[in-house]
Image (cartoon, rainbow over all chains, first blue to last red; front, side):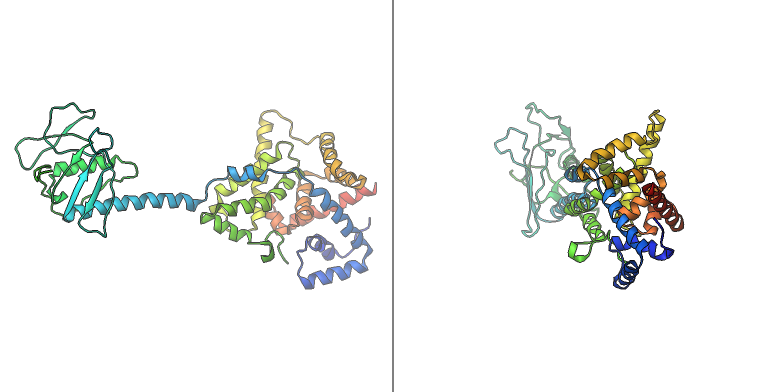
Length: 218
Length: 186
């Protein structure tokens, strides 16, 4: 097989075969091929070689897709949702600590008459949040055995530290701000152990003068 | 010159658009990219003499590609980038086989046997002769020729894929073409 002496034209034959030429270039190369037996033969050979080269084993595209990593945005969305739930919880705590609120928290694990996830309701109906919290209790010790270790929390209203029974808190207080520092700290500590609950920081400027739970008749 | 690896709007979204969609969480975009390019990667792997599991090479190529998609800057075509990854994978596999004492030089007789099995599909004497001619090329010539004639890549894309220059890629292609013609004329 004799090669066409026009190397530039021969170079463009694969591009013509694959449709990579624009209209003007294609017209130019096709016109040359029509008048060049060597290039016409080479173009035909290239077409057959292309057929040979394009024979390949089938691939399982579904298996390939299944093996791919997740898109980065999905991981980011999951992280964003987690962060958003953190901020909601943090905002709820800040609002409760700074405003008039009624806090009723019960543990879902205690065998109490009401075993419900803890909820925090604020006096601001447009701003509410639900906090699930197995939390510490600021309540005088009853002597009953507790399946959960108790912790002692200092009270600002008595000289002794009442026993705090974790995982149960029934507080009928006018404001969470009435909780003692220790009680609030215990509450926050327990909430930190919750899934997707961050370490919360109560703003230092918010007054916290807690009263013993139950003092107001709850 | 148009780029066949980037589909026209009539063929659907471009590779760059699909990559962007995937980065934004669209898993379906990954499916479209795999369906669009897996066959070409398989052909490339088979043409450069990958004797092992071509399916595995193709899967590993895409897994690596999507795992490092942040590194794809769009300077080259997406398919070129995939071929580059596949090529490195195949070379790594060969080095590993060499370390384990497994012969990595392609046995011509074995390769002809494998290709004859594929030729059973085509069942044409001419195709068998063409395959035989391709097998006689040096690995580099076969690689360049495959990318130029099998995939329609430009010399620049070939150079990016195999790690050489455009000029060298052009020389390899024409040397391969001359060798094939001489073999077929015998």
